[in-house]
Image 1 (cartoon, rainbow, N blue to C red):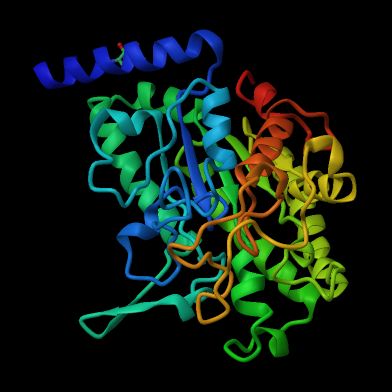
Image 2: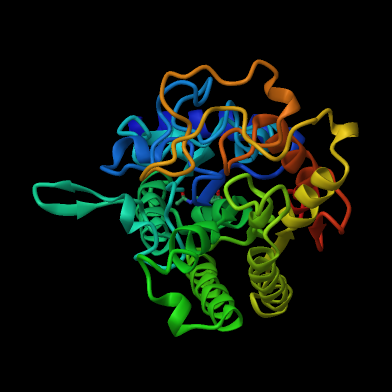
Length: 358
Ligand SMILES: *[C@@H]1O[C@H](CO)[C@@H](O)[C@H](O)[C@H]1NC(C)=O
């Protein structure tokens, strides 16, 4: 009883304070390397970024903060800590947890090429379905922190914010790798995009069934314009066309679920539009380089990663990309700000600021 009382005091102090300026007590994050804040550090996988020149904050695929970290700042919340970090425990979970895993996908086998073997068992990135299982485990623990009070739990869950950014790996590490995966012979680009978005729908329903009511789901960015995918100095149109199919199916799904999940509010964050905007008109944002990343990248098995220990460029804020695939903090900041407070053309039908008050 004493423990529960202490937990409630901490909860009231922490969450009570945050709710003075907003009403989202926590952020729970799902997805891939664009939002992984360090889970892969604890997993046997080659998809890691816990070494210089990555991160002032290690384990993030950027030079600094991710968009979800910056959104947490805007909401007055701490950076959601990695689920796989053994110190992510107790009442701090009430303010959010990050389940994302670099190189993972919507499909369970996406990213398996980065697996390492632990006692002869292949172990790798955590797919979306398993991330949701991990969230359910957290929710059970949170229910315990609330002393199994159903009312308190329901109120809390209806106010937390879920942020999902997933699907990049299902293209980069699966569909676009016919040397490793058969999906491109099994599915047309349209059928594949529908398969992926249908899976997202199942996972959003699973989250809805745990009581979550506020969701932000990000589109894919223009993957064909990342340094890794350029054709000469031009964006790879074939890749971007696939991405556009995925994004339009995802946008329709979000509109549909707003009608079919009673009491829920879901927003579609148009990263594709925001990043395209920056790429077309980089100068006002302070960018001068978008055809290569700031760090020197590996051309071997860990294709788009920075090579350990080699000094990056000196003017990181002038670069759109950090390595050959991932945004710099400067670009992440634009994505965070525009999805937090931007117009409907950036995030539809409401931005995060509005969502946190609904
Ligand atoms: C359960 O939580 C609700 C809402 O916080 C509160 O009003 C109620 O008193 C709690 N019930 C018990 C038995 O502690």
